[in-house]
Image 1 (tube, one colour):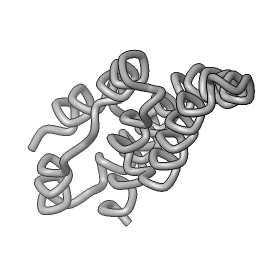
Image 2: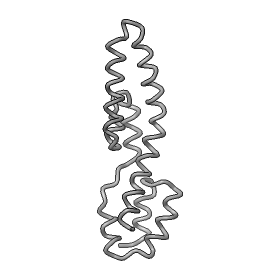
Image 3: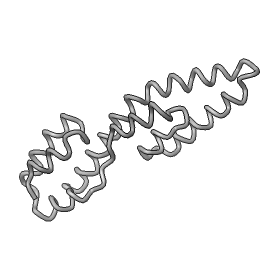
Image 4: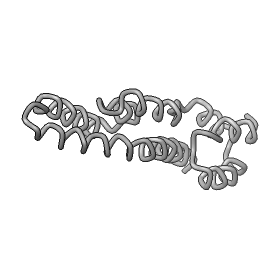
Amino acid sequence: MDVSAITMYMQDKVPSQGLLLLQDKLKVASQEKLQSIALIPLKNPLIGLILGVLFGGFGVDRFYKGDVILGIAKLVLTIIGWMTVLIVIGYIFLIIVFVWVIADFFLVYKGIKQDNLNKIIQILA
């Protein structure tokens, strides 16, 4: 397996500063480790971002990332917000969810990249 091909494949799936670290580790890695790295199912951060834009209030982006508890919390907060919107307090919940969704655009995108990097480093260790 070619190190440059693996690096190109991982280019948009890991943080840019982590890519430099990986290049050095991949150059000295055994062929067996390179093959196992090529088979790792890495998540696409762009899919996490799209899920956040389309279904962020329902926690789908967090479920995709693997943060199930945070996904459930976001979903429950959204449901409570919509159920109590008639008694003004629901708007407070929905504003909280809205701010959380906007923050998650960045947090989930970067978090998926970091999770991918951690998976690869774990195999290389």
